[in-house]
Image (cartoon, rainbow, N blue to C red):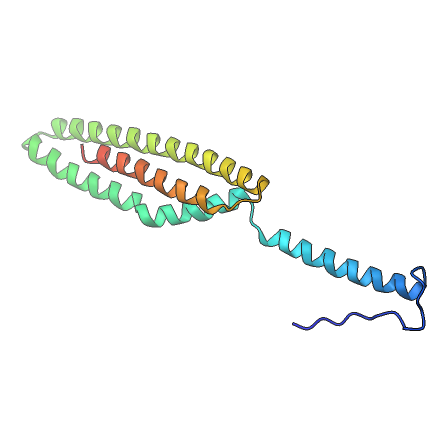
Length: 155
């Protein structure tokens, strides 16, 4: 867009004139406003991680995979129980206990990843470096954690 700044009259050459002061205030106000908008455009490290976490959730489909595993386990437990309800219930208890443990481990891993990523982003901001390396590293680490979690679901 085009910005118009009112200039002091040419007849006023003195730096201390009122017109010159008005001009300086206008320029300072515009620079301050612009820098404030730029600062607001950069999101916080925590918000940056939230965006990553949304990306991770879409990629992982954790709930869907856990439900698939539960359904598979239910079928296996039913087949193995041979119509013995107590055996079926015992089998399902073991499955759900194992799943809960795996989910908690995954949850703690993600909490650790969040802390690591936020710290990385803060350090990158201090060095005025790119946040992209931090996000790339977080994505790779998430893939490792997800693979570990999924392998525990299928065991």
